[in-house]
Every structure is written in C-alpha cells, then in structure tokens.
Length: 111
Image 1 (cartoon, rainbow, N blue to C red):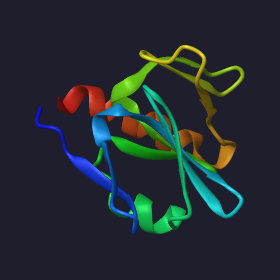
Image 2 (tube, rainbow, N blue to C red):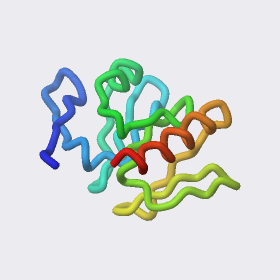
Image 3 (cartoon, helix red, strand yellow):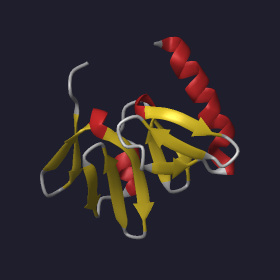
Image 4 (cartoon, helix red, strand yellow):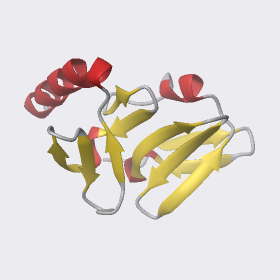
C-alpha cells in the first residue's frame, strides 16, 4: 500500500492519507486528526472531502472517517474509536448512520 499524500491546504502542507483517523469541520477550520496528533487548516471541508479515496466516509455532518483505521464502533453512543489513537473519538450522525454502516459492511467484503 503506497503512501498517498493529501495536500491539506495551499501552504504546501502534505499528510500521508493512511495516517488520518478522521477529519473534522470545526467552524472555519478543518481539523485533521492523525495518528501523530492534530493538524488544523482553513481548507474547505467539502473541497477536501471530494479529494479523498474511497476508504474515507462521511459519518456525520462534521466528520469524515478513515474506515481503515477504525478499531471499534459503539452503536449505542455512535462513537468511533481508532487503532493507533485510543483517545481519539469521532461520532456517527443519525442522518449518516445507515449509509455509513452499509459502506462499512460492503468495504470489508470487497477487500
């Protein structure tokens, strides 16, 4: 699996897509939650989401998750946990839940 890099913003900041756990829209900022910490940019959340590979799924109005880095999902609370960063959590929004779970189920089968 070759490292694919994502250009986070116009300031020539690149990040390995495999290291992204989730991307969060936070006001005017877009926050990348990585294995190694957090990177904030002012890039457009929607623009970034259109440049992501298929393992990145919108799971909430404010979150896009990298399903390859998920360790666990608690459907009662809607919390998603990650392999490399146990303290990092994002959430599934009710509007996105059915589609997210469908993609998750199919994704595992297609690999």
